[in-house]
View 1 (tube, rainbow, N blue to C red):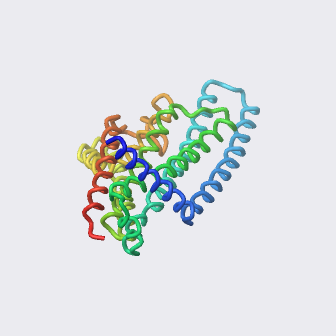
View 2 (cartoon, rainbow, N blue to C red):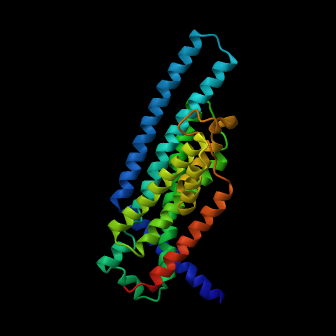
Length: 292
């Protein structure tokens, strides 16, 4: 029993290792790394000049508690704007990187080189998921850490609760990654990409409908947003992370584009974790039953 479990884990990690090296050869990953690096550089240059302007303004005007708080809100806004862009980049990466990992191999017939060996189909799915998850977690951590680090170094402003928000954003990345892999067990590559982006778009629109409903006190619109978040919780995860990263309840005052009139419940984290696990199990089941 122990030897069988060890062999299963060894096979999964072998497939994960192969998936990792396969992903490194993909142009989409190279493009994401280059664009990510350019974004970090441009963001850093922008922060430098904006902070320089703020400091010069402080030298001309007498400092006050109100002015200091205003500067903190400005730095928070800049950091949130950077992370908002990074979040979209992570969504694209989590969707496009594995979008053809199973569907493309099935259509080309290359998957036969794996399934003819003494390898369980569940090991193939889990191994590929582990390989892509490892890449995405490293990429996401570097991108988020780059934004937060640049703001902290150049402005001496520490984004609040980043230790809470970072795992939430990583969970959103894993959720979309899992959905893309699961879609590859049922759809063609093109259909899979449209499906995952469509689900993200549904969550995005539903989230804004809920926020507008909260602002206007419209319960029906709020209910639409809640239902949409249950169908696809990606936007709810981002809004929850954004809420934690805004100081002293500023996120609930609706004074920035990242504010939330209605903050998602922390229970949404449990739902998102369960959603991801169920999606992964469905991917294993569909791939195991599919005629290759």
